Structures are given as structure tokens and as C-alpha cells.
Length: 196
Image 1 (cartoon, rainbow, N blue to C red):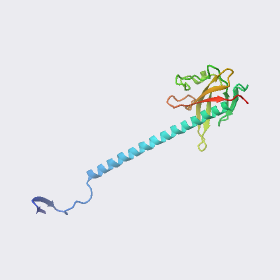
Image 2: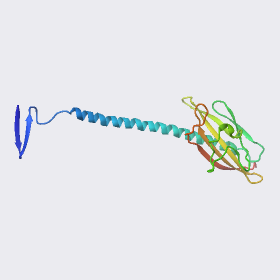
Image 3: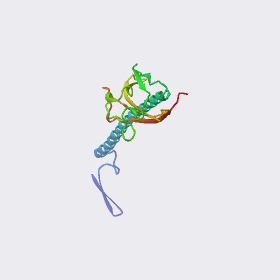
Image 4: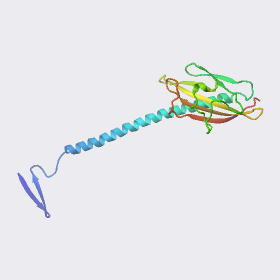
């Protein structure tokens, strides 16, 4: 049953059914599903990037806190006051020694030309008590992360009453090897404490 409709010079042909189409075609549904799938995949990718950024930020924050803690311990000892080390304990009950004395050429970890701790130097070749593998325990999860913390102390003046301290920290992998791609935090300060 077919009819011809005419109006304003246009010819329209209707074959059975009503004037308006109802529902959506299979192609329209496939296009809608494709758009929805692309949107969901994009959302999952954004969540993955956010989780990775959150993990890096957490490690950078912890590295900063550890570097600040070492500087605080070094600052608490009077320059030239006769005390050469302090001891701290990490969450794994490791007693770690922090050397607090410097030399006019610098003592401890090597520094780069930019004045940062040189993490290309092997951990074992850093002067004793100027580097430590510090373990941080997760409060809720109980996970343990080890950080490579190193420092260099340069005495200023004669007799030395001031020291220039550079502390660097970064996360290590589970085998205790510093991660090559892990970013390091470096903090520099001048410590002046004559013991009076």
C-alpha cells in the first residue's frame, strides 16, 4: 500500500507505516556505544594517571620530610661541640647513625655540579654515616617503603662555626636499590650553632 503525497512542489513517498520514524536504527546504536566506550576508556586512563600522580606525590612528600628530619638532627648538634653523631630509629627498629661533622672540602655524599646530592654514586661508596636506608611504615596498611637518604656537610670558616648542609632523599625499590626514575628531593641549609 503506497501513497503519493504532494506539498509545495515536493514529492514524498510513504510506504506503509506512519509519517514519523520511531526508535533508533542499529547504526545509531553502534555509534552511541562507540562514543560511550571511548568516554569510559578515557575516564579509566584519567583515574590511572591520578593514582600514579598520587603515589609519586606521597613519595616526594615523605622524601622531603626525611630530608628535613636529617637537617633538624644535624642542626641540633653544636658546630665544633665535640658530638660527631646522633642516632635515630626507623619504623623497622633499625638504629641509624647520622654523622654531624663537616670538613672544609665537604664530608659525606658526593654533590653534582648543581650542588645536589649525586645519586649516581653507589650507596655503599658513600662515607659511613653520611647515608642511610630509612624505612617508613604505612600507618593503615603496614607496608614498608625504604628511602635512600644522603647528606654532605661543608664547614665554613676557621675555626668552623657554620656548616653548609645538603640532604637528598628518594625512594628505593624492594631490593634496596635506589630507583633510577625516582625523583630526589634536595634541601640545602646553613647551620650556625656555636654551642652557647
